[in-house]
Structure formats: C-alpha cells, structure tokens
Image (cartoon, rainbow, N blue to C red; front, top):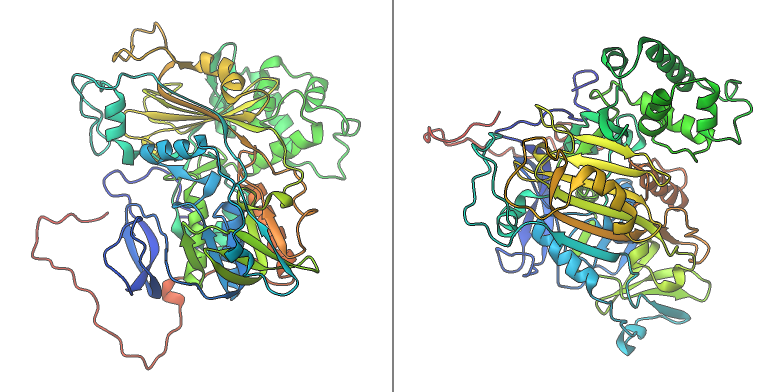
Length: 605
C-alpha cells in the first residue's frame, strides 16, 4: 500500500494460504432457468451490487431475448482497447452495448487454461466459412441504408505448431504439493497428468507487463479500477551474455552489489543512466546523434562491451538498429518506473494479462453497460452519407451513434491496409526455471539478436501454472514462421528432447526441460491506418502489438474516446462502496452475521 494510507496497486508476494481478490459482483434477478452454465443461456438483469472476496472469477452476462434497440455506443470485441473505451463511455453515462462472438473475454488478449487453449487452437485450425448475407438480414436496413456483411472473420492466427514432449501416460504420478510446499520427489510428468491440472494454468495469448509508472498503471489508479486486479512485481531482469544467462542490476544498490561489473564500469554506468533520466529536449547531450543509432552514442562514451550490452538490451530493451532518441526514451521509461513497487520497473497481473480487459468490462457493467457473449455482429448498417447507423446481430437491428469494433470482427472492406506479417509467439511449459534460484522468480529477458526476442517467465505464484512448473513466453517480430524465428533462442535456453521422466540435477544439461510447446503467428495491426476506410463514427481497435507493455492500447482507447466525446473526462475515478450516497430515508436491513458455531471453518488472512 502506498500513498496517504490507501492502496494504489498491490504488488509483491501473494498470500500462500488465502489469496482473496475483492471484486464487484452483480446481484442478479433471473427470468429463466436457474442455475445455468455457459451452454444454457439464461436472461437476467442487474438489480444491485455487493462486494465479495473470492479466489478467482470470470464475469460474464448472456441473454437470448431481444436486446434494447438503441445505444450511444456499441462495442464489438472484448480486446483491451475496446474494453477500455466501453468502460470510459459507460462511466460518463452513455448507454453501452458490448458484444463478443466468443464465449470468453479478451479475444487475442485472452488467457486460457490448458483445455480451453486446446479448444481455441482447434477453432483456429478450422478455416472460417464465408457467411453470405441473408435476405432477412438485408431487410433490416432502413431507407437509403446498406448492410455491409462481416462475412468471414479476419484470420488472426497462422503457422500453428504444437508439440508434446511427455508421454501420454506415466505409470505413477507423484503429487505436486499443496500450499506452496515442494513435493518430496520430482513429479513424473505426462500429458494426462498435465491435463488433470488443467484449471491451474492461465496461459496468455498476448503476454505483457506493466511499467510501474506507465500509462496503464496510472489509469488503473486514477479510475479506481485497480481494485479489480492483483499484481506481482517482476523480481529479476536477465540478459544473455557470453553464452549464459546473467542477472541485470536494476537499482543503484544492485549496481554496486554485482560482481559482474567492475568499479570503473559501475561509475560509468551510473553516469550514463543519470544523463538519460535527466535528459530534456533543450539539452545538447545527444546533439549529432538524432539521426544515428543508440549503439553509436554508447560507443562514443567509450563504454566497455559489457556495459553497452546491459544498457542496450536489458535497460533500453533495444537492438543495434534502434534509433538513438527512441532508445533514450525507452531508457528513461525503464528508470522512471524503478523503486515504486519492487526492485524492477515491472508488474505482472495475477492470473494472466487476460484479466485486465475484464477489469474494464466490470466497470462498464457497474455503470450500466450491457454484456452479451456468444453474440457477434453479422453486418454493419451504413447510410448513403457514409455514416454507421448500427449493426445487425442475430436477426436484430441495433442502432448506435458510435461503433467501436476490433480488427478481427470488422468487415473486410474496413481493412484495406492490414499487414501480411506480424508477431511470432512461442509458449512453453517447462519443468524448471530457465535460471534456477533458491526462490521462485518472475523473470524478464530480452534475448539479443538482430530480431530481439522478448521472454517472460512465469511461475506458480502468478497462477500461470501448477506447482513444480514454469511457463515461458517468447515474442518477436515475424520474419518467417514462429518456430523458425524462435528456433535459435529456444535451443539455447530450453531442452526440447523427449522427456524421460527424470529431472536432471547432475549439471549435464542446465536448460529447462520443455514438456509442451506451442508456436503461432498473429498479425500486428498497431501501425496500420485504421481510419481511412471506415465511416466517420466507426472506430477500429488494433489487436496486441510488439511492445512489452499496454501503452499502445491505452493511448488508442483515449484517442477513440476523445474523438467520440471531446471535452469529456476520460475514465474519472469510480467511488468506493463507502463513498456512494444513498437515500437517507431508506430502511437499513440487518447486517450479515456469520455462523460461529462451526469451529472448524477456515479464517481468511
């Protein structure tokens, strides 16, 4: 907790026995069968809210009857930018409808358990079938209007390669331990064993971190949405140098403690970092390097190869081709975020990056937003003046003043400048960390190469995987297929030989053993012109980008909101429950009293 005794963002070691998260849950009034699951859609409406602590919650609203026909904003897709815009519009009192054709939140930003990941891969391998515009759908257009068919969804995933390095079954499965206790003996992993632990995985399609003083952290705090999520600090930044992994000193104390840097190098490093963090545009420090590479500037300071490597790859998170001023900005951002929540500048959301779009969806729902999963837009209604009048969805016309739609859900005529290449992704479940230590670490590494690879390693404390396992995410710019782009780095860091049930401890191979590997490519539309081919009140949202953090999505959402509602405040702070003013004359009901007769009941922390 920081700042005037009130929590901003919780970051640090999670509680091991009880890890509660306070969420705002709607009290619901059912008008159909109860209970229901995701395969039985029941209609209900929100009639109030209460706070309740619980371990983990996936919030969604479904309905099968006709929706109200007019809205201020219709949002299609529950990606990061779309969800932020939905929350911002609802927060200022706009009537918002938020749809997603999937049965989960996040789209390409989602986090899946192991079985849901397999289901998602099966869907991605299926060639989308072009859905012709039916006469019934076309008839919903008004005078002078046309219906632009969504048709086949934009193809977002390609070059999928999946590999299991474990046997289907093992003769005997050792327990993995509970409550953070390590198993007495290393578990014997098999495919059946991993699938049996399915719900303990949270696997990110778009793994990202938050800079401690980045735009998303500031937005979460200022809007009071931080209460819907929990975070862990990244505990170490690593680098690959001299054919081995090394710890990168981030703080001043780390710099002077490390034995990998000489006394002279430490002084040079601190001087250089001070220059970068204090740099302003009226400073002449970088005069003559504005059109040069950052590596040229570093060489001009007569730094050792060791120092140049640390600064270029680990702190600036750049490459030899990065322009000087761009790398200086990256260095400033890294240094500015140090010392706020942990020993590194980064935070990671518990349960995966896919939790963050849901946080904004929760706020939107609190302020009256209507949510409907498993309901897609079939077409977009455009009048003769090139203005969007609404959408057609499930044989219903839904009018709107503004349409916000993610690239994967948009008509092909809106997407004239989509790139053919994008990002290469690798996801690996391993039996140990890429760099073992006495204490579990949450690690970040930028692997140095002409095409740098960002690597995030997550352990059980983040709820990314069960005890005894780690998840390694790799992301880079696509040049070939994902497997080809990542091949060299994978070979250096990971052991992809068939798993024989033995965790090697004799030092013969220190690489983490891969139990499961997934490679795929996704397009990066963050640098595309998404406004030239759309009506003036249609706003396209990009999918995930190559940047380590969420800043692009936050900035895109702000731009869209400002274009829709110039002069309105973007996501003003939502009040806490004890700040909400109620009718003083309302009769107050009795408080809930727990049954204390059961002396065996667990008590929270």
